[in-house]
Length: 239
Image 1 (cartoon, rainbow, N blue to C red):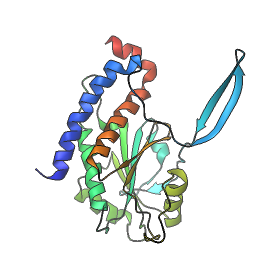
Image 2: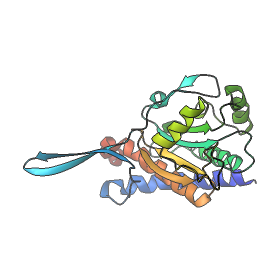
Image 3: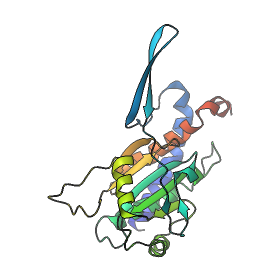
Image 4: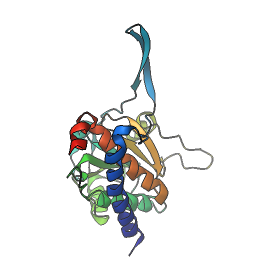
């Protein structure tokens, strides 16, 4: 059994077990939800004689890109979904194949239905942005996606104008600028997977080459999935 299959199996075991404990403990505050990143504004107002602050979190913009099927898409097409994103390029000889295999393992693991929710992986969407759009056309991305067994309905490989890709990575997902002394600044080359909730707020960064970090990502995906239906939790627990 190869590394990818083992990782998918481990994640496949972790996710349903986590679902059970989240359902069991969510109502009593035992679950620590993944934090939110990047406040745009903090609003202070008085309610019932008390000063109350409300944070407006940075919502990632729905910028259009082209996917591996040649279709223009954006985050507006993924309303209500949790998103996991990363950056790669198809001719990368280093960490990119590892990142793609890790994303594939997540895709496969999340096919497992949660016995409490009778739902499948359609609540999460995977996105891989190429950082070399000059060479990575939609046709090239489609071939690469097929090579790694991507489900085209659940996993987009996106390309677009180079400056737009980089601006999106740096300004919207807040990925760090590489050190020009040690990294080729022609590429944003990061091992991070970025987790966004259904409101497109950044909820975490995870090393896509580290199995422990991937387990943490799987855990946080489940937690945010439960958070998505928080208003319905009473009926859920009654069942």
